[in-house]
Image 1 (cartoon, rainbow, N blue to C red):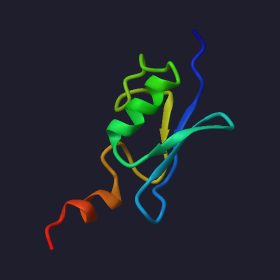
Image 2 (image 1 turned 90 degrees about the horizontal axis):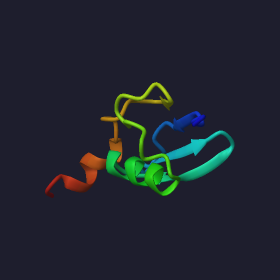
Image 3 (image 1 turned 45 degrees about the horizontal axis):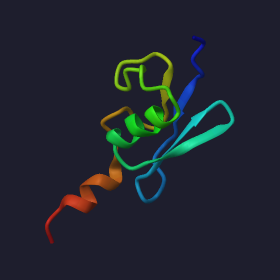
Image 4 (image 1 turned 30 degrees about the vertical axis):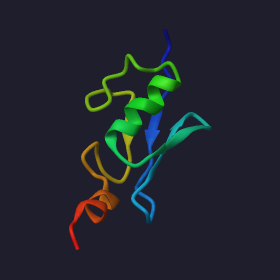
Length: 75
């Protein structure tokens, strides 16, 4: 199977990251689990999200979700 090149784009202002395959937007991720689910829904669930050479992590790797800390910090 010829897998498409997956791009996880740099975080937006709200911390979300767009996930694309070629010119097609697969979804918007707010966490690594979202990337896994987006790929599963696109029948690409055989990809190891954190280790695959197919995924181009732009603007930070699988652990970079800048909006995440804002949501989990007690006031």
